[in-house]
Image 1: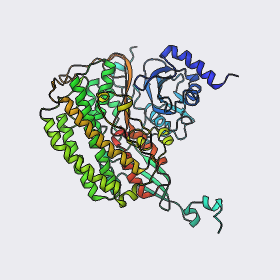
Image 2: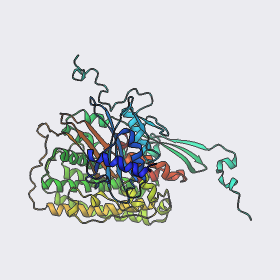
Image 3: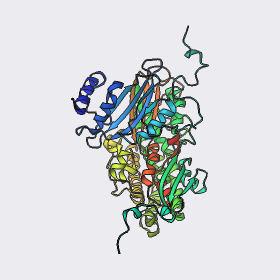
Image 4: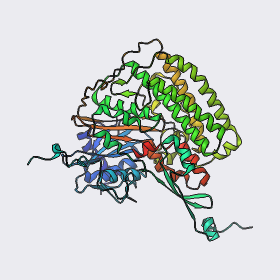
Amino acid sequence: MMGLVERGARVLDSAAGRGSTDARGGSPKEPAVVELDDANASTVLRWLREAPGLAFDELFDLTVVDRLPARPRFEVHYSLGSSATGRALRIRRPIGVEPPEVDSVVPLWRNADWLEREVWDLFGIRFRAHPGLERILLSSDFEGAPLRRDFGRAADASEVAPS
Amino acid sequence: MSAPSEAVRAKTLSERLGIRPAIVELGHAHPAVRRVLQGAGGTLSFLVTLDDDRIEALEVEIGIGHRGFEKEVESRPWQEAPPYVARLGWAGGAIARIAYCLAVERLADLALPPSAIWHRTLVCELARVTDHLARVAALAAAIAASAAERIARSAELAAMTLLETSLGGSPFTAGALPGGMTAPLPEGFDATWQAGRGGLERALGRLSLLLLEQGSAVDRLMAVAPLGREDALAWAVTGPCLRASGVARDRRRDDPGLAYAELDFSVPIGTLGDDYDRLAVVFEEVRQSLWLVEQCVCRMRGTERGAAGAIGVGGEALVVPAGEVEVALESSTGELAFHLVSDGGPLPRRIRCRAPSFFHAQALPAVLRGARLDDLLPTVALFHVVSGECDR
């Protein structure tokens, strides 16, 4: 059976060709950008965190971009850093399922807790196995996900598709 | 005499005495909280579970002042965001405004005139001095060091006045715009700075005597709420609080933007990451920032002040080609980044602000577990959790 490291390396190598330059990460100023398949992303993220030569131990940021009307619509962005090597890496992870949900990365980076709650709160994207996925900035009785591109735009004629 | 068995020691004091742990809510309207957080916008609430006077568990409530910042700026042309961005903080908002403009400029490939680069560097350092002094004032208020609080507040005001003079207005109305500044550094700022600098240095000297050397203050800070290097990194703590935990990381030195590569300064670090180290690092950073402002003023002396260079002043629309970028700056609160995505249209696709205070608020329960209730507000003051950044 192929080990985690080999499997991750293979996925990342094939991904690096698509997105960007060096899968081991760029400088903080010019981080390498890598796009991952949703299906492989959890494995690769764990590998990036744990493989000794990479050791991306810092989750600098986590956010989402809504590409409406493109499909897949949502991309999760992870901004990683390594205190050991000083390298930085940006991961782009398009979400292939509807309604959108991905695995939580709280087991890998504990500060993902509030970041994922904020994404849930404002984009309505669910994180599987998150320890307490509740709204964080909006009140619990708020309806909708306001950072979605189509939030509050129903009355905007330019957003209505011609029939 | 034998030591108490594990089972007995494992119990909390409340359990041994047979009383229920006290749960205390310190809301943002509580006079003590409000007084300490007034320089930071003051809308944090705390739910504290106490064992005697020790913090067993802490919940930090943010979001009370949420205003939909990212939605707001995503719904407008690129050049209209800076005044909103400035409201992420008080003085620190001037730095956020610069970070946003640097990101837009990188995405749109806009050149910045050298005078604007020096002007922005100077503004960053004056804003850091102002914001750090607000942090010291909040700490002094939290430990009831009233003389120090008074000195820090008036020094903060003096620094804010210098910052506003350098900008030609408050950070909300003046400062960075894509391509430049709203106005060049005013004529005669050199003299204003030379007149004000001595007073700030004297205030700093008196404050460090009162807070870092006087026993009653030192007792309130030493060994309180220590945060180790590993934990600081795991919670993505940045800025002075990360450096207090012994991590020598500073974007100004490691990833120099603006004019920092040409400037001389040192990066102070602590060892224990306790409240004392955090305060000591802040003091040294103010000293370094005053020295940096002095260097900027000298470099700008006699040079062509030039036009402000900003786009959007006359109402012209800014076209940003499709692409995305993330730019981080060493702000007074920590590492503040803007992640911008453009699809080439008239409006932004995405404007994400990575605000350090959000990360610091999340780290507070881990930092304060086991500390005394009395240590809560001084520690919150030293982390300088700005609610404008948390709630966005």
